[in-house]
Length: 445
Image (cartoon, rainbow, N blue to C red; front, side, top):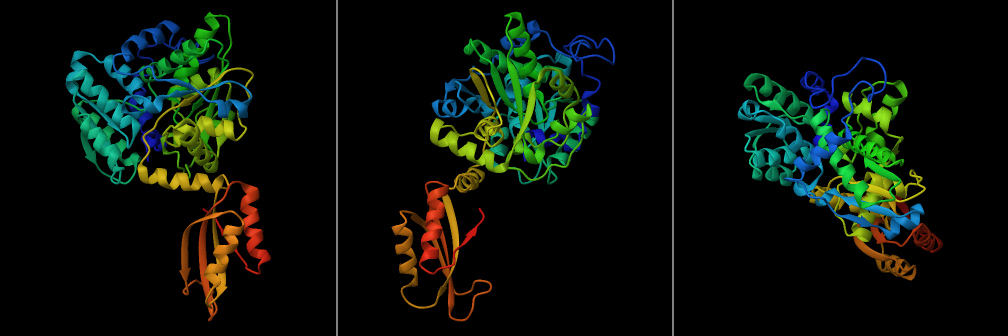
């Protein structure tokens, strides 16, 4: 799991309620738009946050992509927050939030709950500011993320099997010790810090028309949309902002349809960095008023995107960070001008990367696994290999057994993993085997 999955239980509502509005003007009333109610930071506040955030965060590269531009029909730029310090944009909001703490609050230390990017962002920011940090993480957190958080100087407390439990433990710790809880997305200082990313994009692409942003709890897109829309309005321009959620963890479409944050059941997804069961309360208000559209992408879409980024852009990106690219590949984004896609993070566990690459190859019809029952007599393995070679496919793995389920006496089972070029080539391999009298069964990835 990852940082934004913290909100499934949404204990955070109670922790942040008293501080929402800190750093922003007081809400004028309970009705009207987020801007009218004073929930949106001003452009001047976003600009001021850039100076603060620049003390630790890099102005990450903005790389053009010819491959994606050809697909979209417009210039495409990749904002590479996967190359950010700590491996994601999270350091921006964490540092901006903690830089606002008083001397007395800093002395009490900070606490957070996360299993990923937020943990590292908080730990790094705390170290830079000389603040003691405690991070609650679930048991089974990937070792690279655990070690990175410790290396940044945080005291890590392991417990429970999910981030929900870590979040509850962090809330109890904050109450018992007086430590300041640092939420992953639903706080004005966090939102303003993340919004600095949008200003960097706007200034780097003078004719920018669209920004595509992954959405979990909503802190990143809320900040980016509010900052960019205000900056564009100042220049007499309009920039569209499109959010992307994993289909298995898409809380925003039903929430926007109902007019209020709605809790959903999060199904398993490779995009754990945006697997959030309920929108942030403040984030929802801003997104409702400032984001033009929210689309969803499938697991296959994100696996393909990860593969495209590796092959075409030479970028290591976590599945959540590839959501914008996935939306372009899936035809979910329409644009009339230059478009920026935010690669929000690159902290992917190597074992997950291995699985996702294999899934991406299969989803792109470039990897085929077949199970073929064969007569148990000499030469059958050689014969099937010849047929696959004749179809110009490359065998990369073979399993030959007499113990397959449902095999008759006198039969063996051959499982072949084969590289293919495209859907047509994949079908050609299967047809070649069938024409020779075999009965290949395609196995799902």
